[in-house]
Image 1 (spheres, one colour):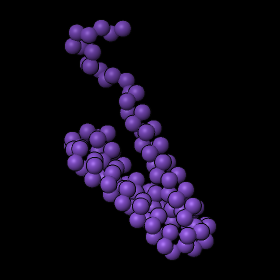
Image 2 (spheres, helix red, strand yellow; image 1 turned 90 degrees about the vertical axis):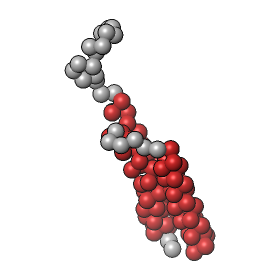
Image 3 (tube, rainbow, N blue to C red; image 1 turned 45 degrees about the vertical axis):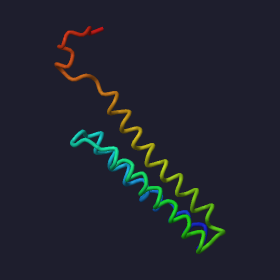
Image 4 (cartoon, rainbow, N blue to C red; image 1 turned 180 degrees about the vertical axis):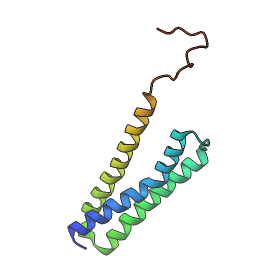
Length: 108
């Protein structure tokens, strides 16, 4: 398989595994429709299945590339979630819009 090919494939599968929960997270950030716990658990199980099956396939095909593949997969998965965390942080830090403080609470 080769080290570079394993790293590229690991990066691709890391992003593919991160997509189902990331899409639900984006939907929750937008607030367009509520996201249910059932869909959240299903997306996590799907991501887990993608990661485990891809590592197992690389282990069957080329055992010497499992470390490179797994490291690239984990790093790309975590990078997707770093981007999502930054987006959520920015969304949470947005200032209060006009008219939000008119319900009697202190404006201090």
